[in-house]
Length: 270
Image 1 (cartoon, one colour):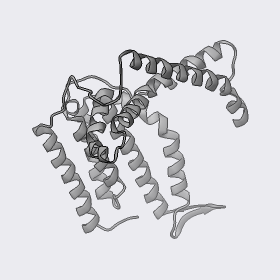
Image 2 (cartoon, helix red, strand yellow):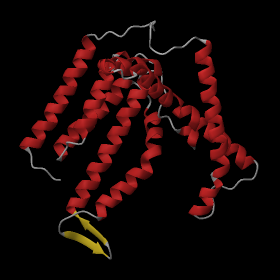
Image 3 (cartoon, helix red, strand yellow):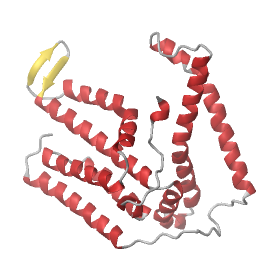
Image 4 (cartoon, helix red, strand yellow):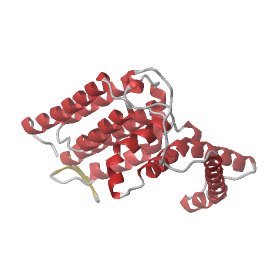
């Protein structure tokens, strides 16, 4: 069900990940995105997977919410893995018609699957442990140097935060509309692909109307509160990096170093 999707939600807590400065979490997450695509053997891939598990445990969030986040991209993971599995290069170990199974294809399928799963789990961990307000402040602070070229840093950060915040809201709205249409006799689960696509029209139209209505309500509320962008804006809570944030940078640097060492010392399988 659409309402089972947990990505984009925030769960208050007192775990290690919750206590980290949002700027530190964002920087470590960006570094992880870069390093995850530079894993060329199973040792470096294992380092990345171990770091992912450690981050999830440090967040203190129930595993069921991470599984809900994976539901969204499970189909993409399966299709991508199958494409890499049967269309790899090298000597085939099994072949039928246009399908060809090779060791290179098996390795690529494993690497692609693990990379995507780790990426989704870490991004879910970031949103689960960081409130939209903290994300907005962190993005704005990190992009502050762009103000020199008159880049609308605060406005962009606000838009990104609002978009992320309303992902679960729109998913919940979609589920309500689907339930209402089913109660009126709509059949969205049978028929071929074209029939199912046509059955989505009664869902998309009210969903767009609801999204525009929510956007208008938010704009009205911001105007009533005299919102004028980042000019002269003060914050109730200021961001301060502490010792635990420095430790997170050191751990991330060690992960990057471990991946580099594994890639240099061990034979690449890709």
